[in-house]
Amino acid sequence: VGAFQFTRSHSAARPSLAAGAAAPGTTTPTVPSAPAGGSAGGSSNGSSTSALDTAAIVAAVTPATVDITTSLGAGNGSAAGSGIILTSDGEVLTNRHVIEGARTISAQVGGVGRTYTATVLGSDATQDVALIKLQGASGLTVTKTSTNVAIGDAVVAIGNALGRNGPPAAVTGTVQAVDQTITVSDPSTGADVQMNGLIQTDAPLQPGDSGGPLINGHGQIIGMDAAASGGRRRSTGTEGFAIPIGTALTIAHQIERGESSSTVQIGAPAFLGVEVTNTADGSGGAAVANVETNTPAANAGLQAGDTIISFDGGSVTSAASLGPLIRQHKPGDKVTVVWVDSAGTRHSASVRLATGPAA
Image (cartoon, rainbow, N blue to C red; front, side, top):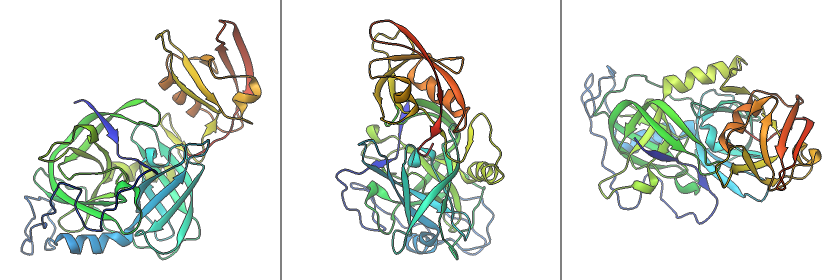
């Protein structure tokens, strides 16, 4: 189905988009009303509640959303996204790629008022789900969810569009397909990953909407926005994808229980301290593009231009293969790293992994 960009917004030029406005070049139709016990846009969710218009949905769900801003460190600036409040004391669901690489995370409920510092409770690298906690939060609003989704359902997506912060912007559309599989590419890492079981919508998602809610005509959250085909947007609309809320909540509850797995990381990740790319000649290994100072990699003698070929006994065949090997470990673990320098000399060193930025 092609590759799609994650809808993460980096702090650069941030065009203003008024709350409730559609993306440039699109319209914002009202979600059709339906009689009590009926459905909106062909919805089959069986709700006995009348469908709401767009303004009512935005007003109802905005208090259960957050604008997320992260500081990436190492001269990489900041990034922005959205989140969904799960508990009154500040557990927030978002995309992993929204908080990936973050040194600090802050959030504002509904994009206004108090700014909270957030910590990472855990994340799932494969499903692109993360759970964060707003420090000192209490009495926050939690919105109802629904796992019933049908093609043709009218939907509203709200979020921190274009990373501008402030009250969320809203765009509307319909569910185009369910149980979709796509290959997504995160520009921050260059890694590709396949995501399954997604909801496809024609609501025109924007960078910064990642982690925000996809809402049905009854004001229930049915998904978490994750990816959009930004580079291939058409004049007639675009393809947006959301993780079904049931899938995201299952992962969040696993994180709450502290159950790690091959894909689920609990708490802060282990950290080596390198930025890597694929080798120019395609010979394999992870080419070191940058080494952060005062990190395990720097202390071991790794330098830009080296190529990592093994990590704790596991073969490093590409830049994308290094991350999963590191994620198998916790901060404080001692591992062996093997690399080849630019002159072709092989090196090996034992390093103790540090506590890294967000997964």
